[in-house]
Length: 252
Image (cartoon, rainbow, N blue to C red; front, side, top):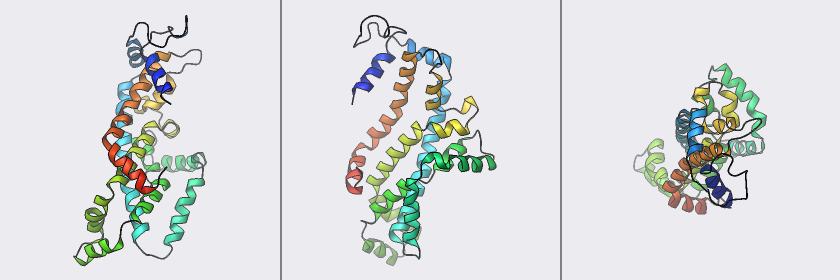
């Protein structure tokens, strides 16, 4: 499982053409950073990283907030049609993403959001899987605790913020890691709604490094290596809570 990552590192620090000439080398013969330099000369990867980071952070915050609130309502509030709403939300997991891309594009174009961050962020703000995960986790929170908070005078928002959220830290860690990783690596939807190169994200930039007649593999692997670092940082920050959250939510 680690071999692809190892080979990506070896390729990133190898000279152009050194991997395709002569015998196979397991380590760079003359390690160099030329691949990284060429990638930044070919395309504005600095702007791509800023765009990806802005989109991933805002989308993560919005998506985690909406999923937690929707999961709380479906798990702890009794209202007519609650089960039907939940079934409809879960059933959308069976619809391929490609099927809804055309109506989503028409909606975004109608709002005038083409070539903007909002076109990438808003259509995927609430995910059925995240809502399902939040509901299942919050079902395990005893109703007696929430009733005690209400008897002390806490309103709905206060109960959610002061009682429920502190008990959902492992769940929040899982949502943060999964949402950030998904939005950071997303390729197809940003490619559809973004036309201005100044707004492109890192995955789109990596696609442009693959030439029609030849590919600069050290440059491509160098940028791919750098693109994994933000995901690794987020995972390292929430690793402890992530393991607990996976165990408690039953996610495998």
